[in-house]
Structure formats: C-alpha cells, structure tokens
Length: 449
Figure: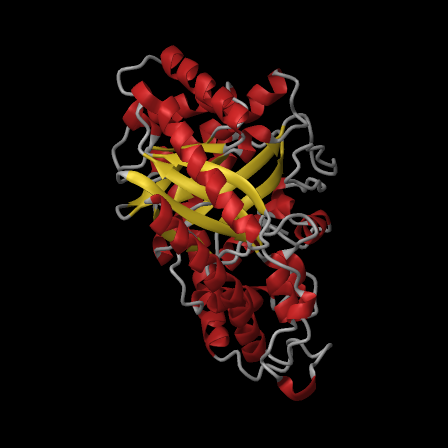
C-alpha cells in the first residue's frame, strides 16, 4: 500500500517537473515575472544597498568523537570555533551559532546498553550547553541493512536531552529504505509524546532537533542533518542570506536578470567568506570543506519574500515552482567550494512569510515536495496536528525519500506534530528560531481537495 501511494505521488511530480524544467531552461524574457517593479535599463546589477549584510548561520566543525577523550576533543574544537568566530566578526559578519557534528553515533556507542548510551549523551548535552555550541550526533541507520534499533536508541537519546540533534537516513544509493522510513516516523511520534508527557509541548525542541534524511551527503553544516564519515578535523560554513536573495530579486524585469542578480549578490558574499575560511584552514590546520549556499531565512529575513519579489504573487500561487528553480540555478552558478544541500530551502516555521502562507492554506506538503524537485531541502519545520498517526508520518517521509532517490538529490523531512492541538489551532512554540502558524487539516496538508 505504501509503495502504491509513493508511485502515484512520483507520477504527479514527474508531470510537474517535466513542465517546469522546460520553463526554467527558458527563463530569459518571461514577461509574467517581475513586471511590477522594473528597474531602469534592465541592468543585471543587484541593488546591494537594499540587501543588508548576510550573516553566518553556522560554523560547523566535524570531529571523530572518542568517548575516552571527548572532553579534550571538545575543548580543542571549541577553541578553533571561537577563533573562527572572532575572525569573521572582525570582518563584519555576525556569527549566529557554533556547531560540532560527529560521525554517526552508533559507531561510538557500540557495546553500551541503552541506559549507558543515554547517560553518556546527557553528559555530552550538558557540556554543549556549558560551552555554548550546538551538537549533532549524526544519523542512525546510515547504511542499508542497519538495524532499526539504532533509530529507537536515537529516540531515547533525543527525548532525554535538551540540545542534541540527530537524524535517520531513509534513502541512499541503494534506494528507499522502508524499514528506516517507518523507524523515522516512530522517532517523530516518540519525541512528540515525550514532550507532551513532560509538559513541554510549547517548546518545539523535540522534533525540531530531528529529521528523516535522504541522500544527504556528509559535511553539510546545517542541522539536524550534519555528520561526517572520515577522520574529522574539518569545518564548513552555512549562511543566513535570504535577505540578500530577496533584495537581488526585487524589481528584476525578467527571470534571467533576476537569476544573474542573485548569483552576483551571493557570489559577493561567498567569495569573501571563503577567503576567510581558507585563512582559518591555513592557520589552524582544520580543513575547510566548503559553504552550504542554501539561503537560510530567519523569521522576517524571509525567503518567502524573495519568491514573492520574483513572482509578485503569494507563495503557493502559480509561478512559485519556477521561482524556486530560478533561485536554485542562481545558487549553483556561484563558483565557490560548495557543500551540503546548496539549494533553496523553505522552512515553514522559520520564515514569517511562509508561516503566513501556510496559515492561509496556500501551501501543502505535496506542493512543498513539488518545489523540492527543483530546489533544496525538502519538508522543513512543517507543523502538523498532534493526532497524526505513525502511518501517516511514514507516508509523508516515504514521499520525500522517493523524490530524493528518483532525482538523486539531498532532501529531508523535519516534521513538527503538535501534541494536543488540531486543525484551526495555533502553534505555541517558544523556540527563538520558530514563528507560529495555524495547523491545517491533514487532507489540506496532503494537498487533497
């Protein structure tokens, strides 16, 4: 039954994607886009003075954690991260977070009971809070054939800690891993139920720190998906640059001009950041692995606004998918060392405009998946009614995984079921990275009439 549902979804996506790819290839001269605010002479130069400066969302270090000496490892890593923060801040960049990601946690919890593993990660969680870094412990079920007990352990770890991040890999080169799909859905419900039982249903910290990931490579700086598989001693950079994209897109007379403006504006930032990152590489011996150029939003620093600047229509209207393809193509044309997703991301509850469009019923999960076929990260911070079943969550995760495998691209699903709330209720998250929105009926969420 699950496979039939997925095949049906993919057929729908293929029809949409075929049409969009043809449209996005010929974006130059599209008169329907950007006509409300034309610029004089059609110059391809972005209005940089309106953009504001991009921020560094994260400097993420990758380490090969050894439980026997992890405290010294963390001390050395934090020292490097703080030096990196000082360097970037001296060049005018605000650094929002310092992060540390490890190899997949099952590799360094072998031989431990569940109780011993949870006790260790409680200590690690406390250390992260004390030293003020965000921590990812990597994925469960990274490889085909991994036991789903890894996912169950991850659920225990995340439900008993405050800051740690983790994921379950639900698709790889071998295809969609249906046992991992089900395991990821199980983790989501466990985290929802645990928060509700603990009286923390307002916090949003449980599933905000977890994602089902598909085809996501090592070394992305974005959480919860970050991990590595090598020797570590590496770092990468994530940007908050939705405002740069929005300013570059505003007033463009056509899509070709908008695309070039976005590329130029992001390149101005990315090459400068890369220059300083390469200096860090030389001075510290930590290997620089690249920038994830996904233009992350944060509340009013909105990628939804950037899309609406391109289409002059609310996000979710006709033209949104073409705008998503245009922005992603612009990102790919920036010739810096890229890593991670490096595509448009549409995190519903991290973006004020997107949250408003969700509340208005203009967006659905199926719509977000269709946009993901031509852009970035999949289903991110999507609010769902608390009575959604594990089977319904698995269907959503399976759709995402099937799309990722079909197009061989990194996608993830960070779904936020809200215990005790149903359609028409407003979320009450107190997470500083989230805005609130109205929950939609599951039928509308899934794009059904």
